[in-house]
Each structure stands twice: as structure tokens, then as C-alpha cells.
Length: 303
Image (tube, rainbow, N blue to C red):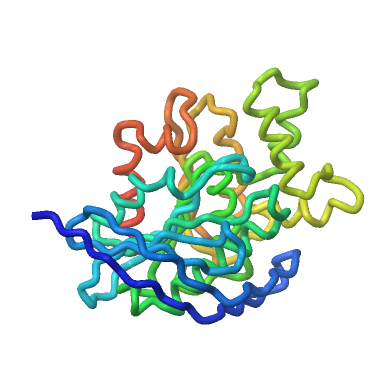
């Protein structure tokens, strides 16, 4: 018999975040007190699920899937893609379920989109979600000192930005990116209509401009573009990284090679894998063997 476990709503306390170090170029705002959203239920044997608001904005919510057996379990944070301007955690449900069934406590995160707030709001939200999860770890059978962040496309950029925030984020043992945008500056250059007819690259250029608040990477906007560059914030206590790209997709493997080269200088390992074809993000993840490769890498870091 399959059992759906229903969980009551929870009023979470306020989460206060401060910048970890001066390597973050923009001040991260402090999230407001969190509130609970009515629990959802899912017909998954032995798992509990609920949706939690970690901030006051409607996008500042995450779904939590966990095994309520009293054991501390490693955590997986999932960050969806969508050009920073669209997408939703509901599209990550099957991937969330998969990691929960493997025994992890899983946090499927929504964040403010570029139309809601410019960078660094998206990184701020990911950090706030992690802080809320760690603060209430006991409720979700979560080990707050043992987790990874997995991001897809624009979500991969946010995940990698968390990974290079400050001089390491407490408890973070690894970052995985599926088609991650490591360098919005490179995407801006690659998407120049005078240089390419690739619709994906041209759209990504415009998406990066929108993320930066609507301005190109020069003059008064240079600081926010610098903050968006993941590799520029590499430091020796950052988490190891795995990235996977399709060889011919519009977010090329060269994006991740930039991060690999910078993190190598401070002794942090980065593995960059490529697949044939042009599949992107979740489509790439669903190719034969890719999810298994990611899961193996994660298990080697958090068990």
C-alpha cells in the first residue's frame, strides 16, 4: 500500500543573512520573516512534502521532500532554469522525487525572476533558502553540514554563484550545473547579432542584460556584471563543481572551462563533461547515463 503523508503548516522564524566576505561585490539584502504555505501531499511511500515560504515575495518559496524517520540525511537543493526570467519549481517535480527516493532531503527552490528584481536578488534568494533549511534542519531530517546545490541553465549560474560566494558557504560540499551559464559576459559577447545567427545565444544575451537591470556591461553597470561573473569570485574554500554541457548547445562547454581554470588556481576541483548533440539543461539531464553520472558524483561527496 502506498501512503501519502500530510504535513501541517509551519511558521518559520526570520532568517538573517550577511555577506560571508568582501568577495561578494553587492550587498545581499536581509530576507524578511518567513511564513508557511499550506502543505501539499504526494503519493510517495514514506515521504513527507510541504511548501515553505522563506521570504515575503510570492516567488520566495521552496518545496521540501524528506523521509520523517528521525535520521539526519544529506540535502540536495534544486534550482530551475528559464533565462532568469521564467521557469518554476513545479517543472522540477520528477527530478525532486527522484532524489527524495534516493534518500536525500530535497529542497526544490523558486526565486525572484529578473522581472521581479535584478541581480543579485537570485543569489540572495538561494542563500536565504539554504539558510532557512539549515535553521530548521531537524524538522526535515536534514544534515545542515552536508548538502549540494544542483542548477539547470540559468539555475546553474545561480548554483555556481552560491558555490563561489564569499570564501565558501558552510556545509556546502558540491555544486552541479547542467548547461550552467558561468559567464554572462561571455554570453553577452557570444550573442551579438553581428557575430551569430544562433537564436539561443542571442536570446541569452538579452536575458543577461535584463538580469543586470537592463543595462550593458559598461559604465555604471560594470559592478553588477562583475558580480554576475562566477569565476571572478573563486576562492580556496569554495565547493567542488561538476558541470555537463552538450557539445553543440548555445551554452558551450567553454563557459565551464572558465570556472575550472580559475578554481584550479586556488586548488578547488572542477569536472567539466560534454555530451554529443545540442540538448540543454533538463533535456540533457534526461539523456541516458547523465542523471546516473550526476547522482554518483553527488553520492561521492555527501553519501
